[in-house]
Image 1 (cartoon, helix red, strand yellow):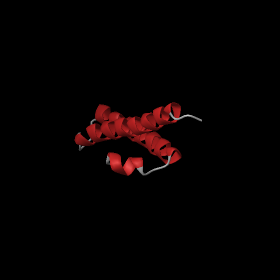
Image 2 (cartoon, one colour):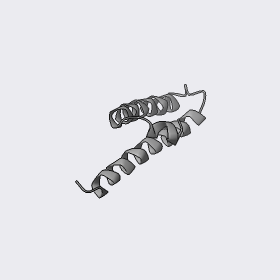
Image 3 (cartoon, helix red, strand yellow):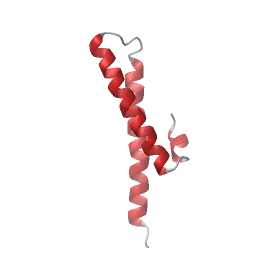
Length: 69
């Protein structure tokens, strides 16, 4: 998932994808512990996706705080 794709989404959609990413991260960590994980790169990809999602959400929050009402 690229940052440009994320910026085109609504805040609600970003939050939903963030929840999905956290769930996937949990499942991947569980697979690591049980020895079932085949692609360990996916763990890194999901962590980076979470960081991208959180960054875009924070940018929007800061833009809202900075804009005069």
